[in-house]
Image (cartoon, rainbow, N blue to C red; front, side, top):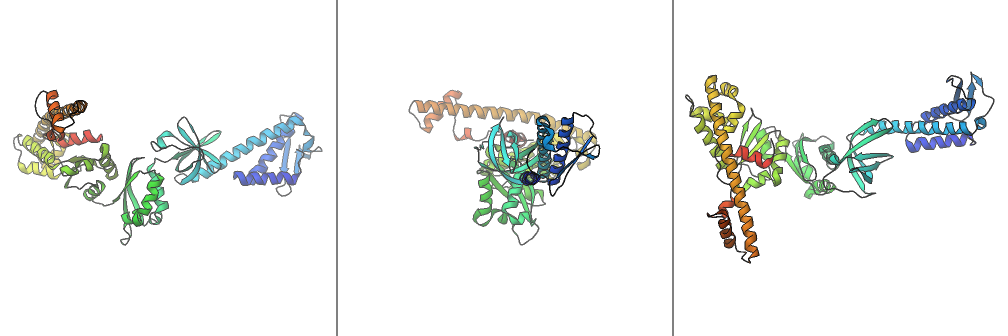
Length: 462
């Protein structure tokens, strides 16, 4: 306590500046610590016995006991009182700093920040941002991404929590808003709200689809986001270590939006069922794998972007599904082709759809008696079960053939007979006769609403 008043005030100013704490709070802390030291020295429990004021300009300390000026100086308080003063000051400074960090970062939630990687703790990445320590839990990290100590980390401030003695700042690089903020940084038109991000779907580390529209007809939303020779989008992709980004043109029409969202695949036809929130999309055979995407990713992201469940079918599957539905419903007394056509126009294109929508919808849409609608749903339900069983058998057969072909190719290679014919002959032998070749690679014929179950199976989505 032997330092002079001016030196003490310089230290307070320095702390206030470095730690972003209000100077007046530090002066108040100093006063409280001085009162605690005086009480400790005189061994009193009365909280009102001592008061202290510190002049904010000169740093002069005025300690009073029962309102009267104390004759002794703080330096005379002794070692134990000095220790009390030090502990109180440290605790008060920490509390003020915590409050300051909480206030500052609460205002920054949703913003992009750049920090420095420190270490991993229980798979969470610890990052220093300005003067605060933040963390990125595994769920908010991009799969496969690793940072080394002192690496620069650009991330989204996702959440700030007051956890008693400390402030928990949660960061994210996998959140969709992280990409939104990157677009705002790289594309001035997005920051200025000339281009609007209408919808977004992301599988962090793999692929993102983002639907954009422009409020100014002279500004091409997709072109502006891509930039000259892809310069703008390249900066974002580089920041995300190569994550693919599809920029989709927004449209109020669900059919056009779904068509845009499934690009680069070419769509032949789209049938929307508003009752089920399902879109049945017909694509040519050569576009099927492109539309579905690797591990179903393209269609899964398109579904999330548009808000529709999407089934991808080939023309053959679509036609078979319609025919099976029509044949099944026409078995019900009083059913007509006009009714099945009406259902198809409403996006109900398979026996699975009829089973799912239920009798009430059929009564309302077809203006038919309830008994007739129930009979239609019952017929559809029975047929749907048969179709599902057939699909399962076809799937198992296809898998068996594929496994046999793989085993045959392996045997042929081991025997030094790496020809296609040798592999096919061996596969036929393993299967116990029959041919294996281009037919085996093609999907087995599916009947009825093949696409519904098949697409759901491939996509692993609702």
